Image (cartoon, rainbow, N blue to C red):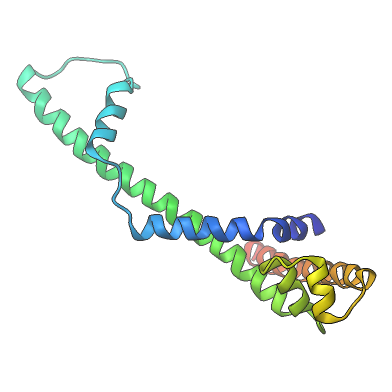
Length: 163
């Protein structure tokens, strides 16, 4: 179980950056351009058999309607994808931040310094006046407590799903 905690600790800063990028994309969402959609339509192949049932004059109207619908659908799907990615990552980071704050004793401050602020071990040892071995023990205890909090969350999710 601690692999999830260790991964989160290692990747916390990059996940925060990714979240910021997703937020900017959502806030400044313009969708795919007409040129991008036209290019995608040029290279796509029909999925069904081609049966000609209309005359030439209907083709222009069908292409225009198809183009507008495809552009709208692609932009909706792209926005939904970005939103889901943002929401999932935000939820993951918010829970981790909450879990860090719920640690016992001096652990919230120490782990915040190590993970969120990315302070070096030497900086943390100096700030809290502790030895390397004590810092290592604190880190191990924090990982155990974080694992326990993740287990509690997993049990709550499983309980909801099973009910």
